Image (cartoon, rainbow, N blue to C red; front, side, top):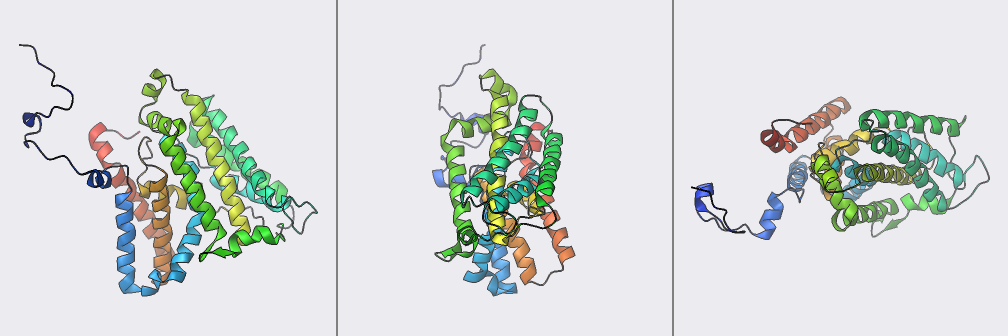
Length: 347
C-alpha cells in the first residue's frame, strides 16, 4: 500500500502523539524562536535584578547612561561582524583595523601634528581605510578560499603595521572641537556616539531584514551548498560582508578617537573579545545561519553591563576576567546545544 501525502497545512495528530494542539500566538512564537534575543534579554534583566540589591546605583540614570556610552563602540563593531558570522566566517582583524582607522582619522582632522583639517570628512576617510582592509580579507576569503581565521589574523597585523607607521614618535592629539563634540555633547542625556551607534544598529537591522544581502547571509551561513545551487554568488557576498565589517570598524575607531581625543594604536585593545562575546551571548551562531543584529546589540550590552556591575560590586579585576570568560563559554554552549543535538556535529 502506497503512502499518501497530506495536503498542505494538514495536521495529523498521530504524527506528534499530542493531539490537535492550538497554534502558538505570534508574540509567544517570536519570543520562543531564534528571531528574538529572549535569552540575552533575560540575562540582562537578571543582572538588573541582582544589582538592585547589591548596589542600587547600577540602575541610576547616570550609570545607565555610562553603560550606553561604553556599549556604543562595540555595538557598531558588532553590526558588521554579525554579517560575517551569519555567513559562517569570523573576523579577528577588528583591533588592527581600528588602529589604522584611528590614526588616519586623527591625522586628517585638526590636530597638533600637521595642518590638515578635513573636519568630519575625516570620519569617512577612517571608514574607507577600514573598508579597504576588509576588502583585502574579503578577497582572500571569497576569491582565494582561504579560511577567514587565518586571513583576518594577517589583516589584523596589516592594520597594526599601518597604524604604527602613522603613529610616529607621538600620538596625534585632536584639536577639532566639532569632532570631539561627538563624544562630549549630549542630546537627551546621551552623547553623540550613542546616537550614532543606534543609527548604525537600525541601518544594520534594515539591511538584515529587508535586503537581499541580509536574506542571503542566512542562506549562506545555513548551507553554502544550497546557496550555490540556488545561484547565489556566495564569494561576492562573503567579500562584501568583510568590507562591511571593516567599514564599521573604521567608524567605531573614529568614535573611540573622538572619545579619547587622540589617535592611538591601542584604541581597540580588548574590544575584539567584547564584540565577539556579545555576538555569541546575543544568540548569533558562530556556525552561521542564526541570529542577527539585534541579538548582537543585546549581547554587547550584557557584556558591558556585567563588567559595570562587577566594578560597582567591588569585584577584583582578575575575577572579572574569569567571570566574563565563563559567561562566554556558557553562552556558546547553550546557544549551540540544539544544533549539536540536531546535527551531532559543530563545524
